[in-house]
Amino acid sequence: MFEQLIQTVVDGGHGVRAYDACARAARARIKDEPENAAALTLVMYAAQGVVEAYDDQPLPVDESEALLDKFREMVALIEGAYKNGSADAKLAALNTVATKLADVSTT
Image 1 (cartoon, rainbow, N blue to C red):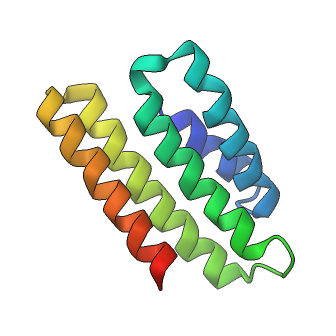
Image 2 (image 1 turned 120 degrees about the vertical axis):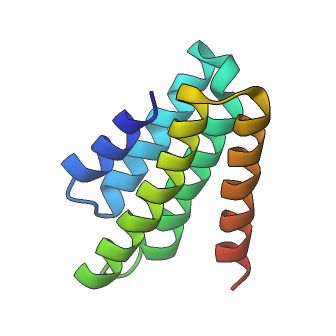
């Protein structure tokens, strides 16, 4: 469900343009998947954060790998909750990811 968005980043070499493509893909899916709008918005926000942080500067390989690991972790958390979880599990996953994104953006 959301793993396709990770694949967009991986296939693009997990560079800035790959995250941009991922953010655009997540946003485009919201119209057709309103039941996943909150999750897709968080994925879009996470991907766009990478674009905003590195759009005008090089993204070193070690940072690129670390960002991909964090991105995969967040998307996997959402993926697991949406595949197998109850509404409470989905909400908990969304809140966890939102909290992580807020922590990243305030440091």
